Length: 512
Image 1 (tube, rainbow, N blue to C red):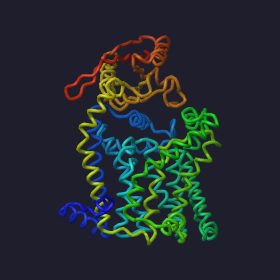
Image 2 (cartoon, rainbow, N blue to C red):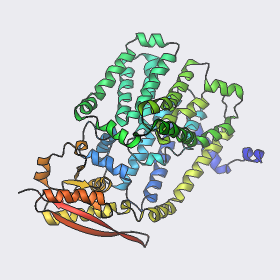
Image 3 (cartoon, rainbow, N blue to C red):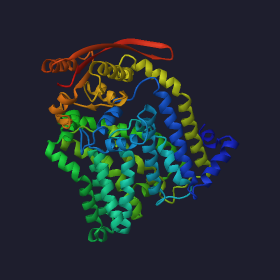
Image 4 (tube, rainbow, N blue to C red):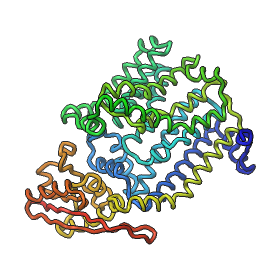
C-alpha cells in the first residue's frame, strides 16, 4: 500500500507541463505563473461560492472604516487604508473585494519567495509556496480581508526587510525594516510578537554585537516610531479604544480559562499545518540527523529563521495568562509562512523532481476540484444563511436608501443601528454613507452632534433584535420628524425563496 502511494505519477502530458514550469524557476516566470493562477482560480472560487449571500460583515466593516480615514478605529487602521486605496481604483462590488483578498495573498507569496530564495534554490522555491497551499490559511481564511488577513502579507514583507537589514546594516533596509514592522503593528497589535521575534533573533545570532553597534537597529526604531506616530497620538488622546475592544472580546477570562484556552490554541495551530507536515515527510523522508539539523541548524542564518518562526508561535503561551487575553488558533495564521522554508532549507533535505511534480499536481487538482464545487458551496451557504441578516444585506441597504431618498429628497449621509447591517449599508447603498456607532460614539468621533443634525441620519435593525430596536426608539424620542419604516424581505437563489425577515428603519431628517 505504501509503495503504491509513493510510486504513482501524474498523467504524462500534465507532468511535462509541470516539469517545464519547474524549469522556469531561475528565469522568474514560474513564480508569476503561480501567482496568476492562484489569483485567477481562487478569486473565481470566492465569487461563485459567495454568489448566494452577501459579503461577510468583517469585510463591510473594513469598508465602513475606509469611508472616513482615521489613525485608528476599534482596530488599528491598516486594513482600512488598503481598502480605501483599493476602492479608489476598483468599483465597490463583491467581486472587487474578493479580488483584493486574493491579491493580498499573492503579495504574501511574493514576499515569502523573496525570503525563500535566500535559503533554497531550484525546485524548492516553488515547493515552499505549494506547501503553504496545503494549509487553509491562504485560500479560505485569507478570503475574509480584514485585520487578521493583512498580516498574511505584512509579516513576510517585514521579515524580509529585517533579514536584509541584519545582513547588510544598510540604513535603507533598516528604515524599511522598521517601517514595515510598524505597518504590521498597524494591521493588528498581535504583530508585537513579530517585533519580539526580530529582537530575539538578532540577540541569538553570533554577529549580534556587530548589528547592535551599527546604526541599523536604531534606524529601524526611528522609522518604526515615525510610521506609528499618528496612531500612537490617536491612541493616547482617545482613550485606547483598540485595547478596550480587545479586552471586551478576548479578556474578562479567569486565569484557569486562559490556560485552558491555550490547549485549542496549540492543537488548532498545529492542525492548520498538519497536511503540510505530512506532505513534507512523504517527500523528504527525514531521518533523525536531518530533523536535528532542521530544528536547530548549525548555520547561524538558518538558525535565525527557526527563531523567527518559533517565537511568535510560542510567546503567546506566556503572554496570554500575563496579559489576560485569550489567544485563538486563527491568530497563528501569519506566523506559519516560514515553516516550509525552515523545513526545506537544510542542504540534506532533498526532494526529487518526481516528488515535486506530484505535489504540484496534487495542489492543482485540489484547487480545480474546489473551484468545480463552488456552485454547490454557494447553494450550501444559501441554505445556512437564508434566515440570517447576511443574506439580506444588499436588499436592505438598497431599500433603506430608497426610503431615505423618498422621505428626505437627498442622499443618505449617515447610517447607524445594528453594527453588521449598518456596515453593510455603507458598502451596498449607492450613497455609501458614513457609519455612526450610536451606542459607542467614541469609536466614530468624526460623527458629531452637529454633523448629524446638519445631514440627518438613518438606522437599520433586524426586527428580532430588541436591543437594537430599543436604542433606535430612544433616538426617536430625541429627534423631530422621525419616520419609522418596516421592510420585509425573503432571500432568493436559483429559484429557491427563503423565509421572510423583517427589518426596521428609523429615518431622522436634517434639522431645519
